[in-house]
Image 1 (tube, rainbow, N blue to C red):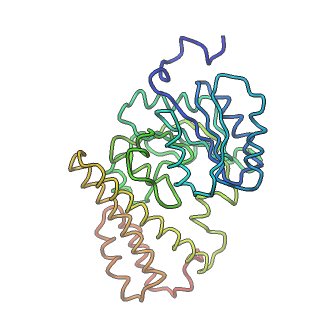
Image 2 (cartoon, rainbow, N blue to C red; image 1 turned 90 degrees about the vertical axis):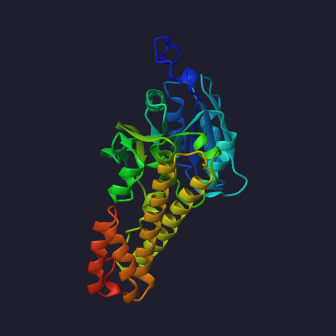
Image 3 (tube, one colour; image 1 turned 180 degrees about the vertical axis):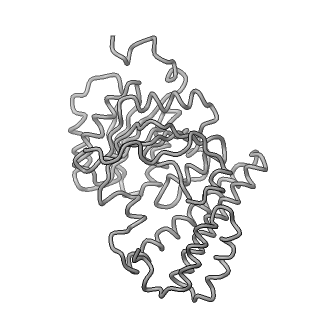
Length: 335
């Protein structure tokens, strides 16, 4: 008897259905491997392979990868009519998915066979969990492991942890399983990057969790969104300025998302709403500090830096930035 049909297995998926979203943009060379890993999952899933209008042959490679498939999973391949960006793509997919839980799989990553089963089991054990992520194994473009058990976070993450931690960390979006309601019952995701917004939404409405075991091969290459946002390709001011402007926009989008979610959650406990607005303020303050360093006269750095020094989660960052008052701006980004 195959594992997929074994009645002795956990009944996790009997009450919780999963849609595995294989999300692709210009991933022609890796999409077949990603799809093969989706089809190898040990629990039955709806699988939606969705290309964000790449125009590079990704959709054709995906169609070839599923040609002739006969098995327990339901799988479809589709493309957006125009490029939506990651957040818009997720909004779109959440509307057509049938699963209670959406499991993300980038079209350049490799899901380990037990991944969906393990994430669903964690959600079944913790019914308040709105997002569950995991650590990952970093792999290179050829699929070789370059770092094991990377990018993990504590088992339980709440609003106070994010406020105190100060590194503006979040569950890695590529590793996430998300309650579908976290997207469809709240305002649409806006911006370029989804993972912090979804992490903080989860902490607002319930629990955010992370399992310690790696469940994914996370492919590292020059087109990673995380590396694009945190571009350190050159050690000069131009690269520093470009990176800073991207992060300023991202942090303001995160703050605005928390505010929209609070406004849309009238029945939520007042303490959760208060903490969510504190988190929004923290991200706006981080954006203000970063923007001041590249755009404002030094006399105008002091006010956001002082606000940062008073914020428990931003004290270290603020103290480090205060040292930049002594340096020429052209030196920023050299270290």
